[in-house]
Length: 157
Image (tube, rainbow, N blue to C red):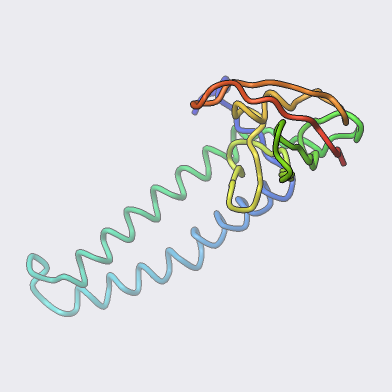
C-alpha cells in the first residue's frame, strides 16, 4: 500500500484495527511462542505436525500484523457525514429499486469495513459511488452486471 492507496475508515473501524494489532503483537505472539516451544520439545522437527502447524500459524499471524501496521499507517479516518441531508461517508440510506416493493437500507463505509452481510456498503462500489452526494427523493441509475438499474432514495440519516 502506498500513499496514493490510502484506506478510508470510520473511527470505530480504526479503533478495531488498533485493538486487533495490539492483541496480535502481545497475546497471540506469546501463545504461538509457547506452542512452538512445546512442539520443539516433542523431538524430530521434520516429522512433527504440531511444530509445522505452529510455524504456519506464526507466519499467518506475522503477515496479518504486517498488513494491519500498513493499514494503520496509510488509513484516513473519515468522520460520519455532517450534512445528513446529503449522502456521504457514514450515512444510512434507504433505497428502493423502480418496480420493487422491497426497500434496502445500507450504511456507507470505507472499503476496508464494507460487509454486505451487515449492509455496510463501500463508498467506492458501483452502488456506493452512485449514491454519494445524492439526497432524499433523488432518482438515480447505475450500471450492474445485469444492466442499468434505477433506484429512488427514500431516506438519508
